[in-house]
Image 1 (cartoon, helix red, strand yellow):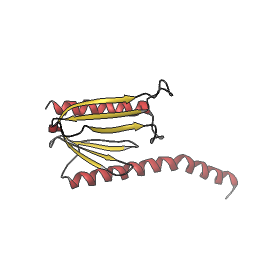
Image 2: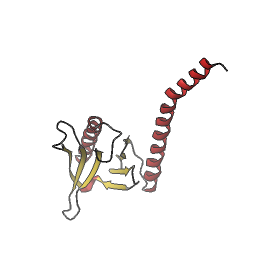
Image 3: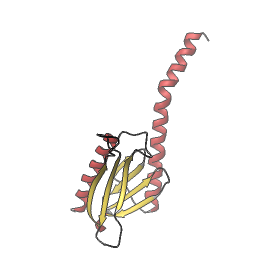
Image 4: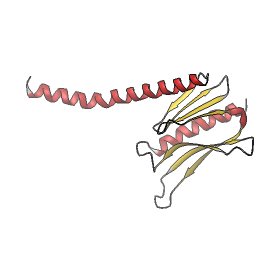
Amino acid sequence: MDSSTLIGLVLLFLFIGPIIYIIYNQNKNERLLNKKAKEFDLKPVLTDFTPTLLIGLDTKKNKLIVIATKNRETNLIFLADVVQCEIGTINEPDRPGKLNRINLLLIFRTKDVKPLEIIFHDDDYDINSEAEEQLQIARKWEKIIRRQLSV
């Protein structure tokens, strides 16, 4: 094998390797979400996979499943118990113009249940994702959840 063929193969691997890795991780996350959803007898119709969380909505049962990718903590939310859904953002003063934390806050009907915070982006822990991209995903889920609340 001559050196130009070897260089070509190395370059091909450098370009194809990350794509294969992304596809593998996406499939792994999808399998995890489907496995957890099956444990709760859910069939998520709408799903999203971000670097920090996996989220799915079963529209027939009106339930939301959220899995934190860091510790695999799973939250199951019955949307009939939720009265309000809003996006929260935090801009740190030492980093002006940059979103440092993006979350979706679910407020429940019962006052003794603490609001649930679904974190889409946190600069302290999430260095791999762009805040603006995560803000768009959070806005999308806010609309989806609000639509489900009005049903």
